[in-house]
Image (cartoon, rainbow, N blue to C red; front, side, top):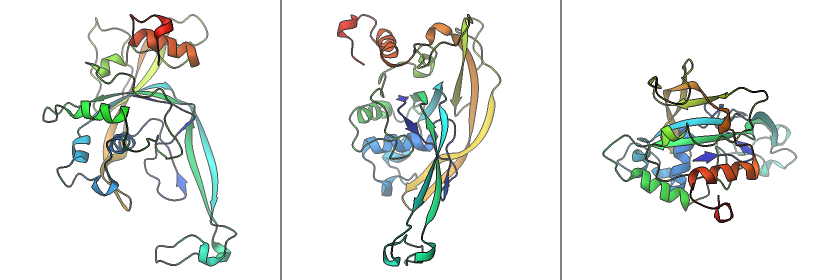
Length: 274
């Protein structure tokens, strides 16, 4: 999958007035997106039963950061200037007082970011899981969003539904970024995964991994019900690779042409479609 578009927001710990975003798609956000594509209601989005949602928790995600984007903060006010019977509801079932009805919130986004995500299912007990997910993402039951409903994905979304090794292919797919200035033969690209990165063999190409950073994120979903969201903490491993600068394919039509050439090498340019 490729996650782009004007805005993304991948909250990890916020639930009230300050809505954060981490620097890459979260596990909870990605599983929630696939659950939406499959048409799993929030009431059934729990691991407590042997359900389709429980199977989704067996997926593994490796994220390549094509462009980290720019952090943006949106200032919101809700509920001000209304009579009390129309102000914001309270937890006790009443309404906020008219003189204190306004709620201020700040919501954080990643602007102009692009991530390419490899999805794998190492659990052999679910042999059709990836196929089912790919078919659902191609024709989603409900609209997809990148962390928040105001952040739909771009039209370029499901790149290759049947890759034999999607994680390895992250090293080969064109990068949605421009080449850096200068004559450097390589460009540093960051990857995030849920398991430690294996050091490649000396013959592996391209590049070598940098130091691996480990961060604990509270984004492993147990239940995504509207009023009962529960997450577990899990480690997130981030490392870097030096890829050939030639992987940088730019923006817009230049990137689409490079991607089509990679995905459909035997297709003439006039026949290619994203």
